[in-house]
Image (cartoon, rainbow, N blue to C red; front, side, top):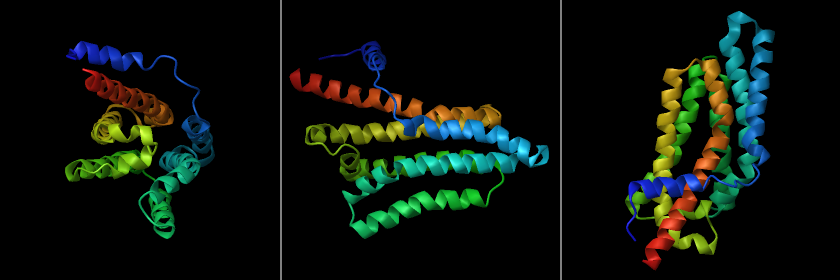
Length: 211
């Protein structure tokens, strides 16, 4: 079935309707950040605003990592042994926090989010180049998703590098304190967009098979 670009955009936007309730892991870290930064700014004083920014961000990021740690280990277990999966998860979780613990410049916090998209996007890009769907299979392990994994792998490359571009644009366009608001709502934006993109892939693949 032939679809015009307008049809694709309309299909994509229609998938944002009737969204399910959001998980607490999507908004609690952002809430911690938005409350913690003003409090720490007052506590540290105007001469230490960078330290207040980094401390509040590190606390929120630690909560986000902690709430997603079990899921990360579960995905790694689909590809590695228990010891390797736990080791990779601890390194992936601990290294950003260690770097931020030594930082007092908001730019380090902002670029940490960009680094996340580079790493995840790079992993999916490597799978695309190898013709593999292993990483996508760890995100969508259900049997009914297997036929969609090749396109989901390509989609995740686009998703991660698009959000990388958006984050870098926000870093350059807005004040760091305003970027915090963007980061606080970023998981909700990302979850909503990702859900719509996944459903778009499924619908397009199903329509292609029926055509």
